[in-house]
Image 1 (tube, each protein chain N blue to C red):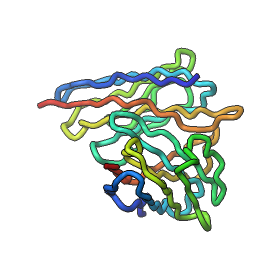
Image 2 (tube, rainbow over the protein chains, first blue to last red; image 1 turned 30 degrees about the vertical axis):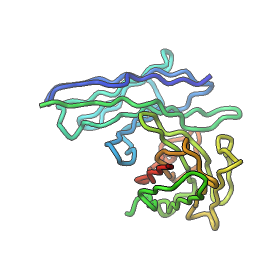
Image 3 (cartoon, chains in turn brown, yellow; image 1 turned 90 degrees about the horizontal axis):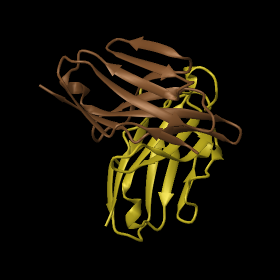
Image 4 (cartoon, chains in turn cyan, green; image 1 turned 45 degrees about the horizontal axis):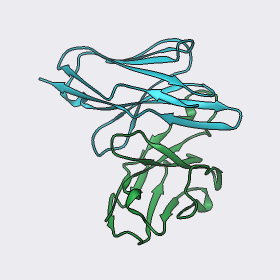
Length: 112
Length: 119
């Protein structure tokens, strides 16, 4: 089956660091994406991992462990504008399936 | 460069009425996706086009939903008749290349969505 798990909500303080975890079980795996979605807006692409390890992109980093079916998104120096939903999505590719499967998203609230 | 354009942004209709959504993908993007996103959920794929061909419509409720992508550019998604449970945000996305096991050229870029309310 296909299953992607993320925490529903998280709260953090401005200037702090927060880690949003994602675990997945899919029939095939060929890459994991993180998207940011502000309320009422479209998801916007943040990061992509296909190999194990850490990808750093400014204040945002994303980590992948394929053997553990696990990823996290790390946000540093949090700003109020980082309050949004963060979606983990797995590229399920192989055999009869070929699609991007999204988690339910983690709603992050950044407080002053 | 313009992003994915969708219209209308909001639509309120009564149940059993028809409704249509329009999407213009990023120029040069051959692959187009329609998703439905319910409140508090992630997007769920309805249909995927590669050029004019619908290559994955397995999750499209074909009794009431239809889609087309004439000339391989713009696309429309139609619901007829709408039901209360169809209330959701309908997102269109496009990517440069088909969804595949390659590098990032299949990254999907989303439009702002159409928020549909069925009364």
